[in-house]
Image (cartoon, rainbow, N blue to C red; front, side, top):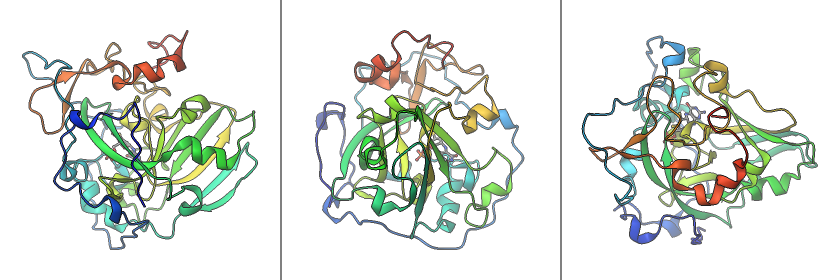
Length: 318
Ligand code: MTE
């Protein structure tokens, strides 16, 4: 059952355009395992640090933030993806991710917590308490979408696991299995994909574990069966198809930090004032739009999250 709870951080209904496909909320299926055989992926060896390609801003004026936030169409959300385990082109994940078997799916929990162990996704996520959260997603590559996620607060999951005070950070890993994830045959990044949050970020009510979008079970290319969504951070923090959660004392060394620490930091807060070394972050292209719009500090969620970073130099802690 999907329960829709409106919260102040949702984009308001009048600010989003309903997608025609957005219909079957009540029919939300608990978990759908899609099985199949992946096609072979023929990747060119990418320049490692250059794996992200920013879109070049066209000349001319930016659209201002007065532009309405329209919900991105479902077909774009499920066909324009970053999921390097299935290839580096935007349409590779939708073509190749059918080889991922998402049912059954277990998550290993370890580290500083009272309830470590092996959890089925249904034991970790309360499917009777699903909420819809319509969030902006800003990729570090300077494109963005508005996505109606379905999930639970990450804090609900964490409370179940009862971390101790020694847990200062939470760490996540994606599945590593080249049979199911053919893109892992190439060392695009050091597999498995790794991400992390400071515990106060993880406990913030905006942080969610998503299991669906547009009222449907997540497609594999979007990170089935469960992924992280932290809307004030660049999209790469949203680790997909999670198989491991650890409560740790030290700041985790995440995938993109390992690959290019001068380009990708641990915090990765959306910040139009801090350029990526190879492109500006001042504007973005909303998928479906032609013109660019200004990027908002903390992706527009500053009122709710800026306090997490009081006293921190956000230029140094990018
Ligand atoms: N998670 C894994 N495991 N592998 C990835 O390549 N890409 C990240 C993030 N999570 C990625 C990942 C990036 S760069 C972005 S922008 C978002 O997923 C994209 O999510 P979407 O494809 O569902 O829009």
